[in-house]
Image 1 (tube, rainbow, N blue to C red):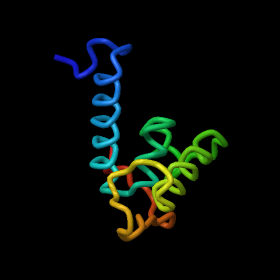
Image 2: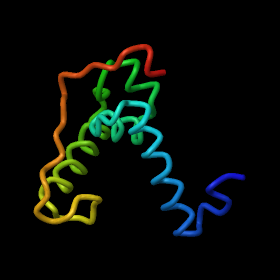
Image 3: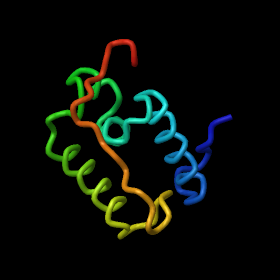
Image 4: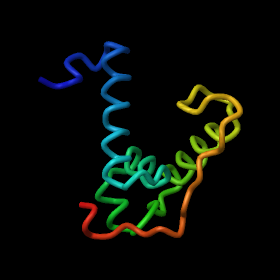
Length: 98
């Protein structure tokens, strides 16, 4: 049974999106930048480029979401006043993360 039986049901859509983001976080060993890039452009593109793909849309998406999380301007899993999410742009994706 798919988590997303009706893509027009807001609750199912949010649950499915959250589950997919969790899969990407697991796949990229907790690297938030890579998980967000994979969520936006697809995991194969992240692997292909060894990091965030050179697509303006994807780079803008990763930057926008991480800025919002770190500034506390949008709802996130981080409570107000908690430590900021740390990102490692130096970490490259290995072929074993496929």
